[in-house]
Each structure stands twice: as structure tokens, then as C-alpha cells.
Image 1 (cartoon, rainbow, N blue to C red):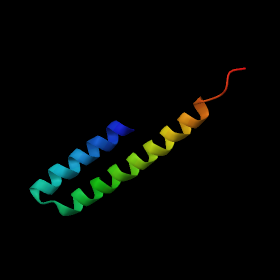
Image 2 (spheres, helix red, strand yellow; image 1 turned 135 degrees about the horizontal axis):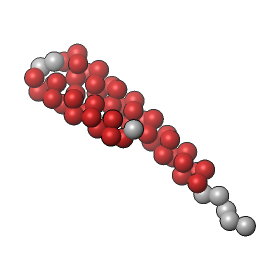
Image 3 (cartoon, rainbow, N blue to C red; image 1 turned 45 degrees about the horizontal axis):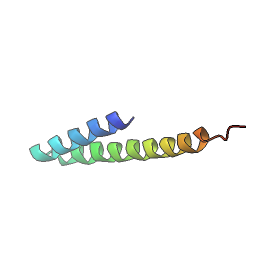
Image 4 (cartoon, rainbow, N blue to C red; image 1 turned 90 degrees about the vertical axis):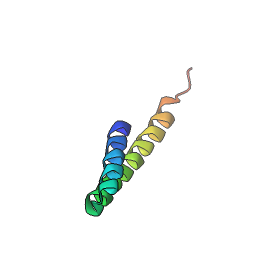
Length: 54
């Protein structure tokens, strides 16, 4: 998921360089959403993965 966020971020930067503001804004928004989802899933996996051994 993090790799897709980076791909959309790169697309947003390239679109911004060429002046496509609508595409750049949308790609940046998608990258931000994917990164937030990645962070949430990462934190959940950290919390669930720390089970005490008996």
C-alpha cells in the first residue's frame, strides 16, 4: 500500500510540473488517503502482533 501511495505522489509531482492542476490535486489526495490507511494498518498490526508469550 505504501508503494501505491508513492506512485500516486510521483504522478502528482509530475502532473504539477506539467501544469495539470486537477490531476495533480487528485493524485495527491489519493496518495494522502493511501498513506493514512497504511499508517492505520501498520499501527493495528503492531498492537495485535505484541501478544505476550505465556
